[in-house]
Image 1 (cartoon, rainbow, N blue to C red):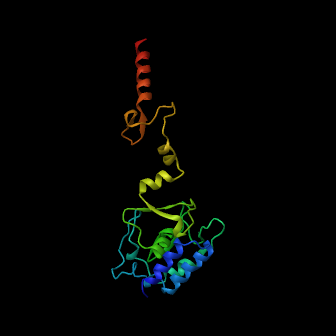
Image 2: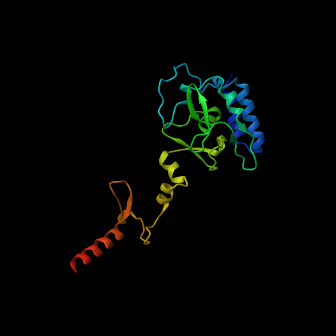
Image 3: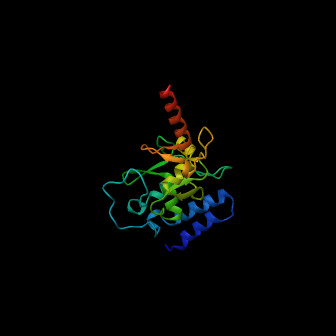
Length: 204
């Protein structure tokens, strides 16, 4: 199968057709490929690694199998009004979809991206633009650095990192900010005020 079939899938994802139409187009293209083994950008003759890193970007071409595409798309729910392609298969403790690939559980959204758009750029991870962890719609996934992905999140670390001022209202400017040994940032103005108060207290 020539690479033109993959080009058709990518055009469908970038087109202006309604989401269900794009969804069916991508499923049809992958099926025509005869599974992921027919995709030139993912085919590899290298052996499956004995061990895989538990975190960080992976080269999917090392361990994806020919039946993967057929198994994958049967676990994807057609899109609703939010245009998300909901994963209906296994999930991990954080609510992300997982699928069994050559002896390993792999993130479903990473597999979806590789199946339709190609390898994830080295050193990057995928951010869900829709904030739906079960979504595997490739157009809702953006390759970003790990740090950027954390800052975009809704967790406490991301919330604190987005703050521009300390609780007392001082700006977190380069001149007014220092990083402690534990990696947290602190306000120099507040630190100076606390030190002055302690000195006054000891002088009484």
